[in-house]
Length: 461
Image (cartoon, rainbow, N blue to C red; front, top):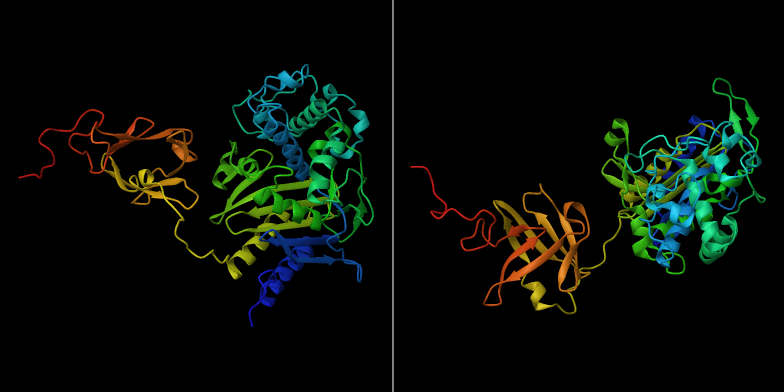
């Protein structure tokens, strides 16, 4: 009997339950709830708790901390997509007088604006936002720690500025804009500024004894766009599906893909070796060869993680109500891995293209840059890909643009691929950002920079 595609196999479900059970027990979390998304739908959820008979379900709210930043980034990208701003604009152009306006909007989204990691003392996550009523209170007298654009340095005040930018340009509060433009269209009815029952209480678990203490819940005020929100496993599962594929009511596929693309490499050697990077409001990590995107969050009393493998079409959400305990980023990554490896994605059947432009078909096949061999392939979506035949070298995809082709990634991102034709109208060579690719290595008569030796190829007598 065929298993319905939306369901997971019993062995997979048991492996998922085992993973969160180990996390809750070893991490000594009062409760932990998780969900897995595949093909845009929630296919599993589970929970563990220290209280018999009171396990949370996917509708119980937890505080999600810095996952809030991804929601803020979505609001900013919407402004860009409506041509109300450009990501390259300095903040000062749209939100003057902050003292941090030299940083561009893209810098702030990618944490490369050079701003401090935190607002001035006392620590904003354990004190009321009323202590910081103005942006100047959030930024302090010395807002910068690094030159603008020089390095990745995670900054909570940076996302406070982005929240204020949204408010200035929309003429409404951040939370009202979020509800109208993101939460309602996506059906995230249990994602709110303040907790709404049923919700978990936040706890601090003693590091050396199995006892707990309740954590205070603070309204973070101006810092809210960096870490205020409460949500549920079910809502974040729907949000994960949106971040993987887009939704034209909120952001299209191209814009959420832009959010997931690296915009800043991590600044420390340990992070670089771990394969970490940051996009536009999204964290990126290479974990055992699997590219994972999403965001984590922590505030006193709560831990949260949203993780997506776009290639596997699997996402996971993990929420716990403790200040420290299970490493929820590792748990979420493991939930993705369990499903992706136990039940790998079934590819769509291969089908030939309905039609093909002969001028494009003429370009495919082997090409040589000097003695380096490449192959150009036509892809199903109409793009072309250039890959080294040795498996080592520069790969790139190109999208057709006004007769030429524009690089989409890698070294050739933004560069032009031009098919140069000779007097006989046949393709003579490819010019990619001044690199000449020929049909034969150092082809005689081709415009190879520096020319080709007149005696041609030879051996040694």
